Image (tube, rainbow, N blue to C red; front, side, top):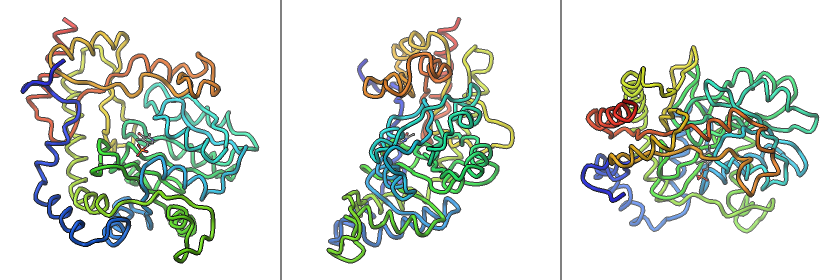
Length: 371
Ligand SMILES: *Cc1c(COP(=O)(O)O)cnc(C)c1O
């Protein structure tokens, strides 16, 4: 479908740029003029500011959310043949990072109400080889961390949050990034806090783990050319640090706007038969990275909305074990809730800059299709 004046984009990063243009332009020019393009003071400052935003002590920035997961797993001491538990419904990076360290991903199903990792399945999946659990705060809703942390504490297992979709979200007043031993964020442009390119971070109170990741991201160097451990080149660019510092100043407002627009969708879509996002008791801090509705026959509604000039997304059309590259992780039918979610989920356009009028148009189109 051609993009016309009246198309409602699924995400519109140009609108965000327009809203903070002079701040961003200044930050970018400052970096180009500084002659310092990789790591450096902008990244250092962003690390302090982002750790503080998350209510934690430390952050270390890398070049993607995937690298954050990879280095967090190394810092947690995960070895080949260790088992790491992850949900079957996530972006594939969660599982890929486990295999980067040679460990074995053990998938578990998600809960039918919240779509996050089901603690009962986690309990059942723990073996004496389990060394870490990676709950994913899917769509911006924090996983059931109290139950997951309790299982991990009893068994001496590390909990690493995959918070790539959950910037600015919270659980009972505690920010994501402070809910496990380490937390991994992505700053891919379309995420709730996005760079002007790739980026990621690990947030933690564990100063030792953070120091280890700091070495690993820059060739394992403690001093220049003294390679203490075998490392990687996964450093953050200075430009991304500068852009993220600007955007972080707006993040609280943007999350509140996402929440307000999500409430509007939920109020207006009541009674349409669509499954709407559930916010469990005691959790008011859904980050609403994605407004995930569900409907059997989702593809037909998606087509109808597309014809009405409304872009939508699907997160994700396949659970991890349905991907040809990862089919060894479970036969079809093994994770029925994730499989149903993949078949029924429809992501509606949601971003801080979307207007009430546009939301009304999406809702009207859904109702017209149902009628
Ligand atoms: C985006 C995402 C990642 C990966 O982040 P990149 O920055 O793209 O490497 C990992 N996990 C989840 C749940 C994500 O949504």
